[in-house]
Image 1: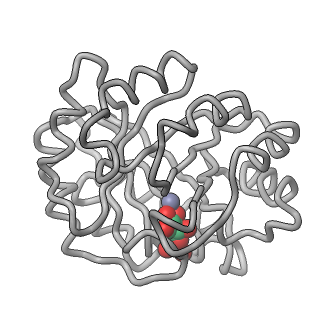
Image 2: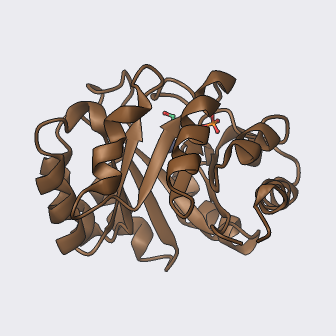
Length: 226
Ligand code: DX5
Ligand code: ZN
């Protein structure tokens, strides 16, 4: 397998009042990462959690906290997120056009894994320099819904971006986020996505563990075997 599947339940769809228990339940059911949606009420029309909640959660789990920052000023969050115990720091390319190189370096030197996300309307070419930079991002997140809310419909036309990235970068971690579940995973996996975020389809299922396994199997099957 060239790239390995990383299944990341989006904790946005969990019971925030029982976050530690929900997080550990997901890891026990086979999740690789926990996807944490940080929204500032400005970059997106919703407000969620920030570093204090990450810090509290970190006391209850050693899991990889895959933090997706839907914020206007990602640079201002790097230090706080690192101190809080974030593992991955994904910023949006739309708000880092001028300073992405400095931002990636800061994320790395703070001990986190840098990644870049793009909204549905943003052309994929915009992230190429970040993957090819001297300090490159280590994952690209292709949004498959408009960021801001869980439970939206998967946008299949985003798969052109995933295919283009997979073709150019065979070993890159490519993440998809929004509307992923049993009915859409095969499309995303066939296009080349290996990091799968899923909120409502996992937390809304009677057996979330079955959905996590199904997502992983689909990614494994779509992988080239050479
Ligand atoms: C949306 C968030 C997603 C969201 C996905 O802005 O980035 O992570 O929680 O939720 P589902 O899987 O329900 O579309
Ligand atoms: Zn997300």
